[in-house]
Length: 410
Image (cartoon, rainbow, N blue to C red; front, side, top):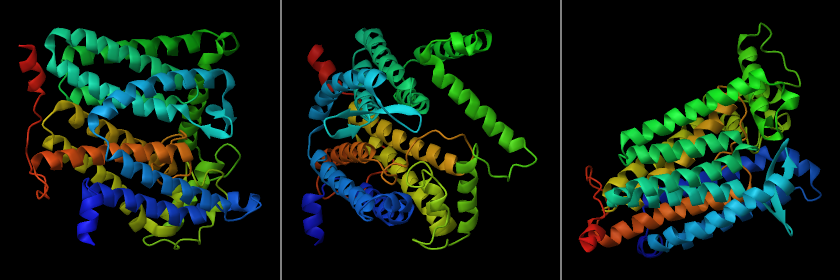
């Protein structure tokens, strides 16, 4: 059995365990969290079976992608970027609105979130251009400018309907550049420009009446209201009163409070019937309610293992591109997970970020599976380069630059 697993699952075993663990928790919790969907459906098992189908497809995709060499991932990202820009533009005009945000696009009978494609393509392309910058000092400025322009285009297209995703994505790109030791002057310039832009927009929203502002600024006012309401709820004397404005947040708190140490066990949640997004934005609250503090910490542990394992994989890589790519993909997943958990715990306002591989959502599950497939593929290639029998990564190996290309140029 062990030899069969080694033969077919050739990526890092720890990443496979994290992936399978998240899928298992997702199936268990979706049986409970999707109760409101099951009640509305003609076939009560349809929502859960649909979710299991997407997880199965995701596992198949992760397996197939982990067999693809990194150079093809590198090339395919540019094609996906073109598709992402087109579909993100279409969302602005013909997007399907759900939960007061037009984030979905429907083509034929298929409905998906183009922002997920944009996130994937931009992170891969960012890793590609960062590798180019590290390997060609002569063209450093050119590659940096191209990367910033592409990042600005994708994030701007996402920004209108999904502010938190745009901020999270650009933050990950910046961290990738920081980890790769891009010139600090360039990183500082990005921070200065973004800060100035933020202050300019903030001043405009305060000086110009809302009705005179373009529609593109509507999400800014939405977020301003969310932050204001979140602050007021923290300071309010009657902060435990449930009303229409705080219904989700309060029931999320109640779910976590009911969990205790070991929870009420899967299938026994009460708050799932009061939370409109129990299967998505607030699924972590349901996990804690049913599995307790122990289950909540287990989920956090899985994401932390993913992040630390990605760091070790990066140190093992002999070239820049795969090292920075695995860091970028893992960061995007883990930061998104922490944002979701912070929302469920009412630490921050509601953002609409799903819990990767656990929350309901076909596009999110399939694209996240591609993330895992790429990371597993990188570990597979590293094992093939260093020898099949090497099971453990050594503790300290410095990321080496792709000197082969430089030597060819010389």
